[in-house]
Length: 212
Image 1: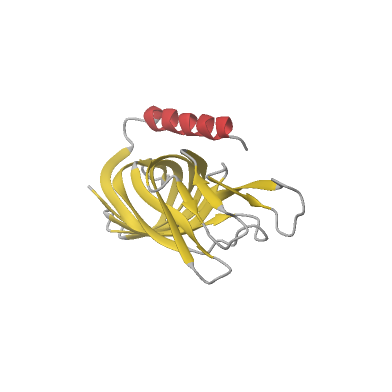
Image 2: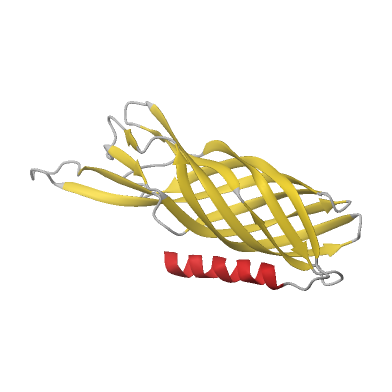
């Protein structure tokens, strides 16, 4: 799935949000949580470990009465990244700040006081903070570069209490290349025998939202 398809899905979801019937329940809220993220690289080139970040921002949700199906969207300041350990044991933490815009199809079911929900949908993100380049001395990958655009898919589940508090977890599957790594191939006798590889954001988040 390429970037154009992801953006297309996002636009369709936003149009569906605007096209929902007038009797749909509309709520606004604030969402925040903890990100446990990493970047998927070729492990022979760069082994990426988890790093902890955060996310926070406004959200909107609309749900069809009785059916329990609706759409939620948010604008989140989200911190992701990875941690690496060089051959000499030196740890390097690489954190990148994004403005993420997820749009999810959500299905709620259960009792009015306590409901469970399932959610899935695309997201796009734009890098707004964090270093652009990191040097990793003593590693096969000499330098890692963060890219400015990201996109992928979200899959989540959780519970809603008294129609105003949601607690859930989410898995983010990055589909675009968010980082690139360059270096010299080990044990190579050739001059300037460089390699280039790329990595995609992956990770879990634990979130809470208050809806009004």
